[in-house]
Length: 469
Image (tube, rainbow, N blue to C red):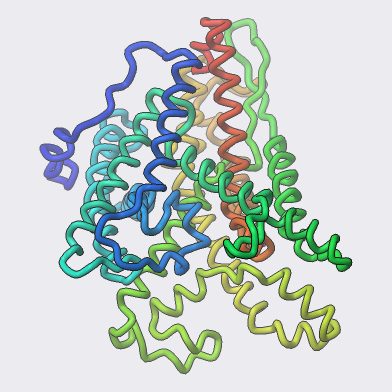
């Protein structure tokens, strides 16, 4: 008897959002998605009761990616949901959990186990956030803080399920896109409130002020220019694909099966970001434990990181202002001296990029298999739909062999591309938003647009909608 059989009586009785009996209209999907996003923003502005102080700066750059706001009801954000997915993917990929995700029954049981695990992690991460010092409760209020943070993540878990079944896209993607977009527009276009309030306004306001003072600060515009460049690159990359010719029916109606460069979408980056954030939190919790928490201070690369987890936290933290700092150093000290001064930061950047890209490749491969997008799953789908590749026998093995030439390679290339773009963006955007955030938001919005277009087409042409579904 496996773990799925043992835990089935537990996860089978968990509350769930009932799927609609009929496909909801676009209007209803938009209403449900908007309602979920509105509740997300409201929760982000509800402060925790019994909180004496907060230390959100430790994960400031990761908050938008985790759809969290430290000190509020969504302090843990979607962290437990994503972490549950990461751990179970690793267990399935390592064959520790023997699950056939192509089997609908096994897939449903796996989703039930993932939901149960996410609920457990909601409470566990709420405790970790409090015990690590990210949240500092008043005396006697520790349990109250833990319950509030866990409740916030539980609500996000069910809002994600609501959006997935009744709305557009996924709740996780919607919350990330909403948080990143809000932070980006505020950082860029925030109006100057005044010196008494201590707010100088957004980047545009500060740039205009620098022009008025007679010394235009063009360097401050670097994050905005790079953010726009990342946006254009991602939109361009979304259109890059390899077309595999397919034929349907006895008459051989022609068509194409596109394998996009971004075949893995942005999920590898989401999973990597959640993993890196948890490494940082755990490094804080184990700060006093020998070897794990301290005792490795002799390492020249990161002398202030302490133990193994501290070193990993350093290695998985991006040097966010690297590009801007490098430009300023080169201007002030000259090219050679500037590069020499920035050498440790550049070394850190190379380590971070190597780990990020490696993590994206691993998660990209897992995601393709788990999402039913691998060569075997796609060949079965094409075969069952009566499709085949012209010039070859109508055999699933033939289709799989041809898909094997493209999908594994595209998966690795796409994972490297999104990892590299996210990493370089993190180092270029400074305090604006993270490169991961921009990358994820553009990809999420692009796919929301594609899903809206498909839904609209399905409403106008029901028979074509059944084919697309």
